[in-house]
Amino acid sequence: MFLKKDKILNHELKKTRESFFSKIKNLFLKKSKIDINVIDHIEEVLLSADIGTKTTIKIINNLETRIRKEKYKDSKEIYNILKEEIGNIFLDVENICLEKKIEKRNKKPYVILVVGVNGVGKTTTIGKLAFFLKKKGFHTVIGAADTFRAAAIDQLEIWANKAGVPLIKQHIHADPASVAYDTLQSAKYKKKDVVLIDTAGRLQNRISLMEELSKISRVMKKIIPDSPHEIILILDATTGQNAFEQVKKFTSFVKISSIILTKIEGTAKGGVVIGIMDQFKIPIQYLGIGEQLQDIKVFDGKKFIDNFFEYR
Image 1: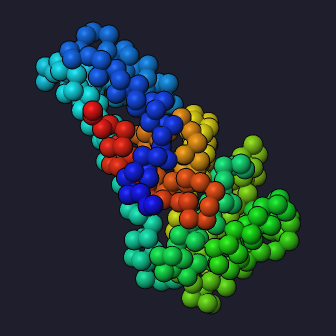
Image 2: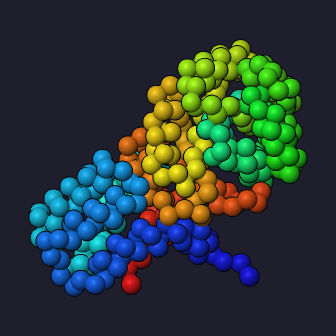
Image 3: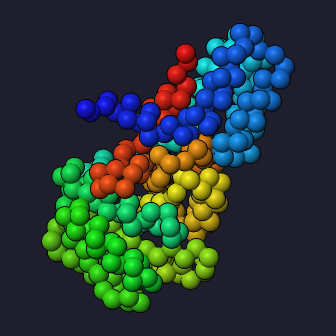
């Protein structure tokens, strides 16, 4: 039996909904009229959801201002205002889907650099994204430029084979920039549509990682002058505020175009999505929602919010 997309999303985000948004929902359902303490309760729930202090304060201030200005007292009205204020955070971030950006580019290939710390599901996500793009009709190739770990190359090869997408690789400790160069050269010659370049995730050594990414970019420009066209950051949703810190560190030395959030189905910390989009204005392109090849879905901010703010 197949479920509709909104029901599938509802199921996948169950833990986040029950731990965070249901607290807000229950708070309002128990009150027909709003008392002076309700704002404090809302603030507590927002903070407990890993939204982050700055974004929580912003939401609360906007909520208080509108309540005073518009004289709202009914719980359902204020519930809807809260939904609207959180929804506005998503509307403020321009999110052009990756497929459209690939189609819009006249010259091939569209080069995507994939970054993220070890353990966030980067290798798995690259395999899923390659499969997703292949299903959309894009001829894709993967470059195994994370040469720091032998396991990274081997795992990526397994996922590339599963996706039915070619992989360009060298040996462990090979120059990552050399792998990227070979991948782009091959992709350009074979007229591939998309290149996905994996990179090492040694964030604890930020200086060497920054230098490595800079070198990869410089070498790729020798083949395709305006590459990379996209830098995607992979984040593990289960890490909550730690994911927020990873965005902060990566954006300090590289321009992140978009985010893929993994393991969303196994976390109660989905509120970090709201904080990241508010503080960094970086769109979330996809959600990783399982371990299977097809377990990647386009992120829809409106559906994300509607899923939790269904007033009953």
